[in-house]
Amino acid sequence: MRSSVMTPENAGSSAQRGRLFGLKKLKPAVWLAPFALFFYLFQLAPMVWVLINSFIYEDEFSFENYLEILDSSFMLQGFSNSLWLACWSSVFGLAIATLLVSSLRRVDSKLRDGVIAFTNMSSNFSGVPLAFAFIIILGVNGAITLLLKQYGLIEDFNLYGKWGLLAIYIYFQIPLAVLLLYPAFDALSDDWQAAAALLGASTRQYWQKIALPVLSPALLGTLIILIANAMGAYASVYALTSGNYNVITVRIASLVSGDLFLEPNLAAAISVLLITLLALITLINQWLIARSDAARGTHAKR
Image 1 (cartoon, helix red, strand yellow):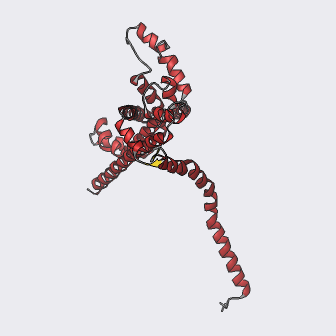
Image 2: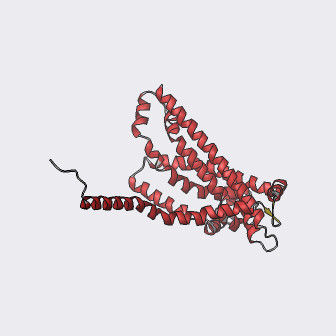
Image 3: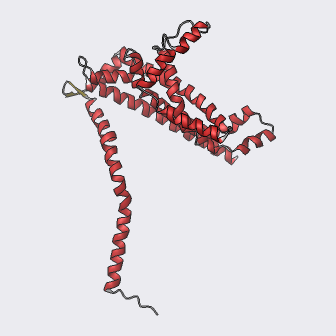
């Protein structure tokens, strides 16, 4: 019968195993330390700075910055224009991306890989180069603009107004939506549509009753990301309009970089309101996703 008496050698080996186990548990935390440091320096610290300075007015703690924003029709117009562009570009971009991804599932793999590679490339084509490309193509003397005028299809198109900006917003929303939605469509099985067709369901009924309910969390999540992406767009708008179109990101930039109207505390207050607005939209999205999941669960039990 083996003895269970603890010897100094056994005690030493147990302590060594305990130390090794403790080091193994600490190893993931050590690897996460650089990420935590960068997250603090570039995410948390700026947000805390913005929040604190948004309440500073003439070196005193005050709500004056927020009152000034709410009393300014010019600032409210900036929020309104940004929301209009963000919402409509997100809806159109999401709709086009959904049709594109749905079609990609039914084409040859080489063509599908080529389209995804092009989408990856075009998702990084933004800012000043994108604005310059649109000026060449759809500007006052742009190639497509002159061609459409020649055939009488359009009389006047202003790239530098809200409809021109909506076009450029939709363009850079589509690649991002495709990249976000492409993995989500793997949740759909090809056999589902075949089974629905055997039971007499049309293509519209399949999408309405089966596909869209399954994809609804991904669609809603992508919509929120697109809205946030559009609300934060700055370089393309500024390069296209030279800051003459009133969107909220241009207003923030003008307040922190201007020589005559340098008001960083007011810019901080605008940023806090923008963050609050995006947080509210995100909470609404999470509520809709929760309701969608609950409805699917209830339907499955039946």
